Length: 330
Ligand code: UDP
Image (tube, rainbow, N blue to C red; front, side):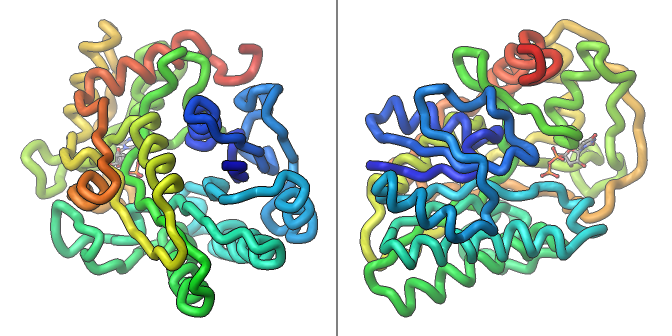
């Protein structure tokens, strides 16, 4: 299939491009490079520096490359920023997706895979979280993605030839097996890279956001899924997508680790001391988020390969130590 990968120069998108290639598909990358890295896209993959709001240019790309399906990764991802600048999030994530979907409608591209988030569940009513758990996002980031889910439901209700898969990500981590693709967010806010930066001496310490949560060790629990496992689900999703599909899947391994457990594991993996500061809670952080992912396992035959947190952290460590400045000068 000819597959347009939006955000293909980003962390998850770049891993998707590689795996799509390996699976015999032809990816085409669209990225505005506001956060993505040109160096994360191989030279033999068509690349367009285009923003999601440029509907006409996207339409042209869809036609030119006879695109069969779209994987939509491009988005802003910072919860804190979304609270401070909600319109930025609604413009990029919600209106951006609508613009992309409009271009698809003009050309007649009917297959869509969407990166959604566990943040659409907000402070969940139950854990583990099922796809049927009530969605009540508590910040603009979560809502900006939730709105897109609703838009997709509306499209499929009026166009029986359209089909989509929504993946709700838990915490994505790790890097490519080859060690040449990995996480490079500017600024970085995610736990695992920041812990590893502290181990490398790239930052002075790591602050644990809250030790008074109602969890066994008082720190937050999250479900860390390896980026290649996440991407594998997308490929299964797109290859099995049929007309009229409106599918929603959680992507997590179904087991949570606390912040303290991540720190202990990182210490073991790196063999380094990790200077730690115990700070107060970060606003908007639910105590525990972990998935029930039976649905994606049963319906798509998805089986995560990296269920050992040590292995996930080791994979990220390999990338960060080989690329201390990310894609810059690498
Ligand atoms: N966290 C932390 N210190 C940091 C960054 C994150 O203690 O510098 C915690 C955060 O409160 C959350 C977990 O680590 O409980 C994972 O946070 P991250 O930002 O990686 O992902 P999120 O769960 O917010 O999507």
